[in-house]
Structures are given as C-alpha cells and as structure tokens.
Image (tube, rainbow, N blue to C red; front, side, top):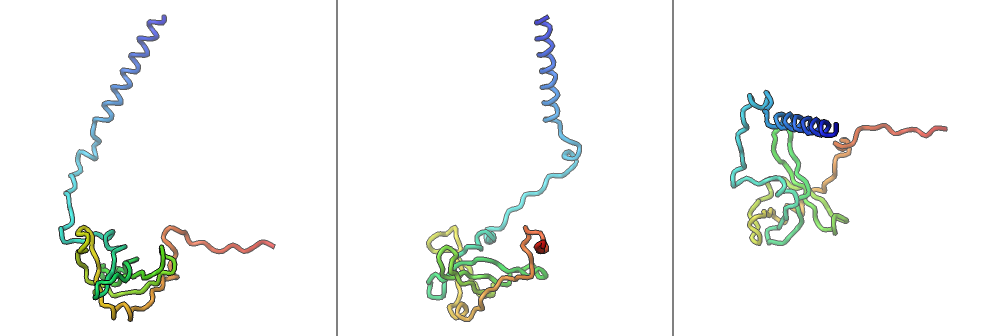
Length: 153
C-alpha cells in the first residue's frame, strides 16, 4: 500500500513538472506574430534630460552661479523654452530661483569631467532674469483634486 502511494505521488509530480515546463517554453500566439522592435540609441551629440536637470551653470567669467532646477517646455512647439536656475542657499533652503531663456544658455562639456556638461551664460542675463514663481492653478499630477471638508457643528 505504501509503495503504491509513493509511486502515485512520484507520477503526479512528474506529470505536473512536465506540464509546467511545456507551459513555460511554449510561445503564446501573440508573441509569435508580433515583429521585434528595432533598437534605437541617441546620437553621440545628444544630451539626455537627466544630464540637464542638475547641470552646473557658470557665468562668462567661469564662476559657478547655480544649477538648472527645472526645464520649461512649450507643449505646442515641443521644445524647451526656459530653464529655472537655482542660485545660492544650502541644500535648497534659501535658494533663489530665476528664469533664463533656453537660448541664453550655451552647453559645453565640463573641462573637469568630460562625461558631464556645464551651461554657460552671460552674467548680465542672470542679473536681469525674472524671479521664478511656480504656477498655482494646476494640481500636482499625483494628487487628486479634492474639495475642503466643512467642519460639522
């Protein structure tokens, strides 16, 4: 009796493993008919956005004047129009934010680190740049719009 139960258990396990293995190796009908996507990589002259945000900004005398905090994109044109420059402060506290036209910034490889970029701008453009003020009419993307609750009497 015990030998029969052991043989039956081994047989069931073997059958279950065979079914699981065939399910893993068999391609689905959808995957077999879909063409493979063509690979794409950016040209060597392109700059990734993660290299832009946080990029150091230097004035025309080569002095560090801040870093790019944000990029402003015109959705109609699909192009960057402005950069928000964070100046001064310590760890973001007391930082002054000004807006520069994207065309005023000239990017070049960092002389100290060829894998990074630095933006150059005339000091006169920084001095005359307006203060950046975030839009208040748009709710954050991750927060649903809610109405304030009224206290119950």
